[in-house]
Structure formats: C-alpha cells, structure tokens
Length: 90
Image 1 (spheres, one colour):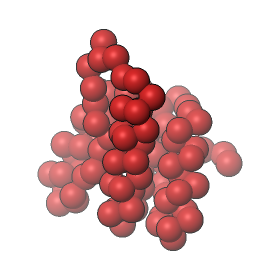
Image 2: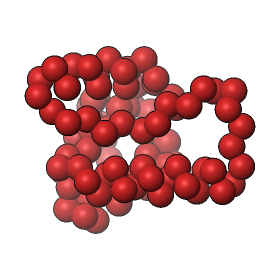
Image 3: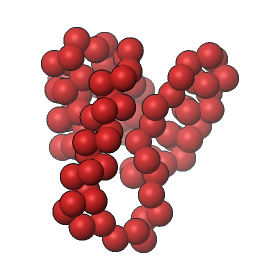
Image 4: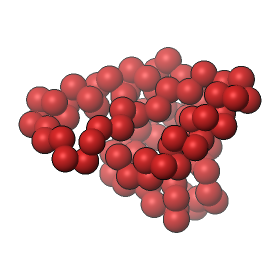
C-alpha cells in the first residue's frame, strides 16, 4: 500500500476525532500475492467502501492510481461522498 505512514496517521487522527475508520489492509511489501489473493482483497476493500458513509482518498502529491480510481467510481455509484486529502482536479 502506497502512503502507509499517511494512512496510519489519518487512521489515528480520525479515530480520536470519533470516526470509525475502515482502511485498506496494509500488507508487508514482501508479501507475494497471486491473482486470487488480489481479487479477494479487492472484493473485501469494496465491501469496506459499501459500509462507509464517506470515502477519504489519500492522494499524497495528488497521486491517484488505477485501483483508487475504480474505488472512487464504486463509491460514487453507491451515492457516497468522496473527499480528497489534497486538492484534486478531476
């Protein structure tokens, strides 16, 4: 997961502010995943999004990857508010 430290910081900050935070699973970068593992993790992450009230995109340096774009589309298709950590032009 890119921006692991930023996710951890935001998780703590938002939790202390009284929010329930559902972050992606941060695996050790050395963990090898096959296609089935990746697909399972993708499904689980979409389930987290479906449970959310809002999605905060951690776009450090305004980086938004392909999987994050799909997740944004999914969140919006479910009527969820999507906000960005840093200013973002769409």
